[in-house]
Image (cartoon, rainbow over all chains, first blue to last red; front, side, top):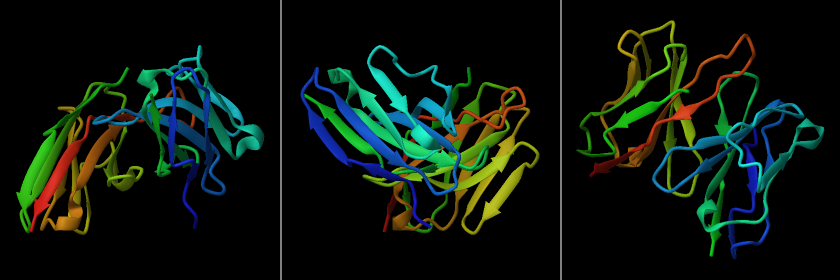
Length: 112
Length: 116
């Protein structure tokens, strides 16, 4: 069974530029999560989807971050414009309802 | 909201020794406690989890214990091997209002190094 797929794996941009991350969850998993992991820390939830609906986005900085999950499968997380403090690893995870969360390899973002 | 504290931040052991990582949580409603292993350049991988209706769970060399009264849970790795070297994260989650969701709150991580 294929795991959670994320792309790109690495991204380097200059501040004020836009950036987007893509996630393809495990087949059949209806719940999808985006986490941000700062260096030396645990992941922090940004947004959770159940199917197409964003049901928990309380930690998403909505002034510059946006996310979508069209058709309840793939998801895209966007930052516009990026700031220096956005440098982190962005992790996508998926689960079947309340079951175990499976994480992708992440996208390492560096903002210069 | 939930707050999870994890100790120690670093742990160094000799191959064959045991390793113990401890976590405390604040929300008494939390009822699911997974442990993740994260290797360099990879996403966290679930290694074991425990739910609040049990006190201990084992899977080969790995065990997790839960004390709901004290609000703490621990990961025990026996007969450590160099390939156990990684960052380990605990997390806590609670169901909310009858929905199918539990938000995971992670600890800060423990860097485990197993010396051959």
